[in-house]
Image (cartoon, rainbow, N blue to C red; front, side):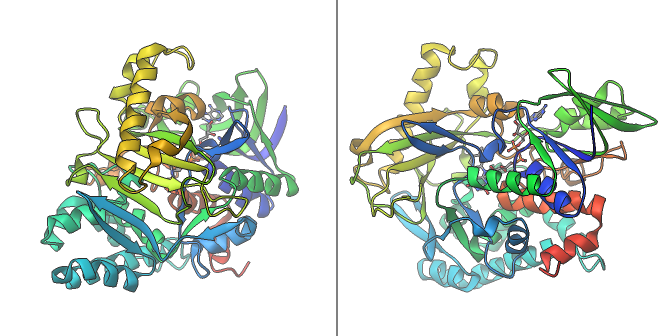
Length: 495
Ligand SMILES: Cc1cc2nc3c(=O)[nH]c(=O)nc-3n(C[C@H](O)[C@H](O)[C@H](O)COP(=O)(O)OP(=O)(O)OC[C@H]3O[C@@H](n4cnc5c(N)ncnc54)[C@H](O)[C@@H]3O)c2cc1C
């Protein structure tokens, strides 16, 4: 049996960031991952000699002077081949009209105000809020307690759609501003302004793609952890946690191996963590019930296209295309594709043409229900037909941004929420973790602490999802073990 300072369950981005930070702070860490490769949503798969990403297309806020840049430098991730996206990094086509998002708050306002001159003042006010939210995010980790907690509370209690409707008069502009939000679940009755603004602000500051794919993030983090004496074990599914005196002391893997530690961090869905700790630990029933009752955000359908050589020019921006106005109606109740994100993989050979484009659209768990108990590869013709129809509808929509796309397709691979459920264990294959609710902010914005004092949480279900959100949460989790001062020093680049 091995013994460590900290055991981290799950090697997704959340788990690996925590392990990297703690290992560099001198702690002996062990990461236990159920899958065959580390990375969770950052893992890649290979088909016909090409690599495909599973949960990463672009990231915001990597410019110097940001917390993200500082943390990525600290962990060696800034050495990866990041590629800055175009000034107009996101384009949104709604009802045949195309609008652009520019990097930089001022440029963002100018660009959209050119299309919506009557909304210039409101756009400026909105940009000020995004800027404030971004600055406040880092202040939350300031050990002097500079941050005003009521700011987060206000944003969590505010319904994002109602806020937009109160600020802007033009419903088309509201759709445009929400149109890049396939990277979150646009649920009109519950989406908090907190989730909405944090899903935008870092991307407006600067937007980046990674040449060569997201598994480089996981690979770099794993090498860094091992260089500090830590370990990442794959095919090590944690089946239970046990202990005594109100604490966890041991992780038991499905193959019977056991590992001991002083502290445990789980990057799993909070309900899954409770299930692991539930049997033999004093996990309060009320807490367990609360975690089990959390709702999950929708999942994603991805059509990964391999294109015939030299048929489509690479575009260094993302293109979101909607069939009709009201982007808040996605995923559509009729199960058809109402909006799609088209995102290129950076050509690694420097070619002006692109070989791989991913098309993404939200997909509900309800659409997956008929096959939830069937093993991958055995889901039959009806499942294949559903995937073929969705891919077909995605391509048809994406053709508005990429004319001739259909004729350029050489191969097509698809994934659904079932794929994510199967590979990462994420309940209902949800793309963004648990659902935050402006009507229940305290119940859905989860703290990193649990009722078990040496069991902490991290990952996308706690506060914010995506690379940026998961990183901010990892900092909060690590601060519990090594103190806010050390985290603050990393952020400020003064380590
Ligand atoms: C289709 C899609 C596209 C996306 N695109 C972007 C994007 O362009 N930019 C962006 O910023 N974000 C994007 N995201 C979101 C981003 O990928 C996630 O928010 C983030 O990677 C989640 O990291 P995590 O560590 O919280 O969870 P995960 O990546 O799910 O990691 C959890 C890990 O725990 C492991 N695990 C589960 N159970 C056990 C167990 N019992 N024992 C051991 N290990 C276990 C899993 O195998 C997994 O490796 C996208 C997500 C999806 C689904």
